[in-house]
Length: 498
Image 1 (cartoon, rainbow, N blue to C red):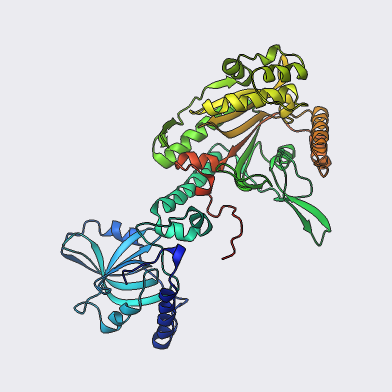
Image 2 (image 1 turned 90 degrees about the vertical axis):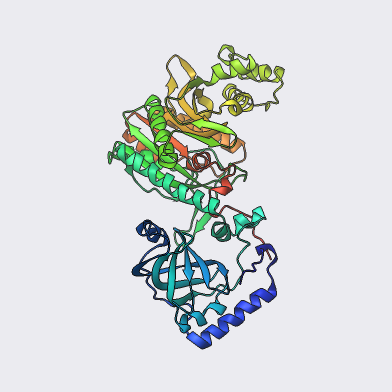
């Protein structure tokens, strides 16, 4: 009963023993996987209710608990069972447990799920315990559990078989509980800010709202090629046009047919929101309030550790102009440069490898990514992006090459992206045509104009601020997780043939 087997090297003998026990159990008790069993209390509720019970004291009350067997000692006299809320000790002895209950003990293995009815007491050592009067087999586990104290040594197995990772790794379990709390708190924050939640299509006939390679599929009935969305932006803007609400948001799943890394997964979670009669300055304030609220929800304070760094989500965050940041880091004054060719030459002279047809704005953004991004450890808003990489943002007054856009960085990562949204339908069409032509030049021949969205813009969209937050990266920061695969329950992996 105490022997366990590492998942990477399952013993066929151990598996066969469990199969034999299952056969015997079916013969002896019939249904080993009963449909109906009702516990009266969770393990955490039991611990809270009887927190004041003194050692060597019986409560005089009977409860029914259930959970997975994690340890067994003295031939099953002491068993620890875990449910989602915690563990409780089960005591089975001839002085307290009837023979029928004790007869089941040799058939119980680590990993089995059982239900127990009995009286609550606290042992001499202070352990809260249920004296078993009745034991019910709820699920016979046919595979040995991973070794409890060493967990899953193989990182790939942890990601591929997440259920085992969470089963034996309290840190992983806590991380996903925190993820749920963060997403819930994010939704509650936006609702408290009077934003209305909506749902927009995940299957779209025309992909847009970002520059990314889409996943393509086909609808048989409609006889139509469709795409998994890369962003919900163009649909959320249609909501602003409709007048349904002045503040709209969606916590959504996006899909981009691109690389996989510690910060990228092809399926990921974004929050996008749009706020009529607001601008990018308002969205900066919204981000700061949001980050502070989420840090408080998870940590109870705005300061927390990420790796060897101490981060602070206490606003306001510094605001840094992209051209100014690049000038400080490299000495190149892009605002003094007039042409694309001059920009490429200045960057090459500084040691950067630049594409031969890169525009002024693309060169500026590339140099920023290479020299500045990694230095932005504490949260900061980088403002005034080049217009030629920001097709949906309004120009900065007096500087037509820049737009009212910011990205929020932390730990050298981009976490948020926001604009004073372009609502001039003529300018919007011109920029989207240019974006489409650039996509075609890159070989994206399926990229087309979203004429329905442009019709909506012709109808008139109020001035607005728009914001997108990378929820997964934000959760990575708040849970001290170095890889996006640590905070996605089932990250994308290559199919493994055993």
